Length: 150
Image (cartoon, rainbow, N blue to C red):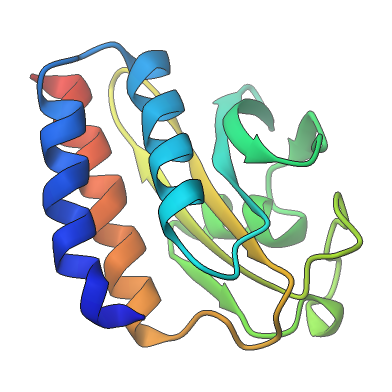
């Protein structure tokens, strides 16, 4: 799977490079990756609003609309300013189960002058995300941030 990551990053960069609107790029990014990655059942954004993360553009089943910063995988990643790779969400203390089918998750936080939040990716497969995915999704978030700064 990870052998396709460099090509996906180039395609994503091309897709987002002509647009600088946050919502448009978040929506296209979510759709593009959701349809091009295997074993992913939810992929999208949460944006900081005060002490909460509020649902942004995504693909997958309907999701929790508000998450408390510091709680669950998304809130923990955001509060700790570090990517969270969770091989089994049922073993993560305080996991917020928005989709019962999710078994593993990766969350990458981002912070800019314009907007802060997280990219959240869920899988119905245990141990779906590892070091290669951490590197990949951190690069994805960097492409997203660069696209909205231009």
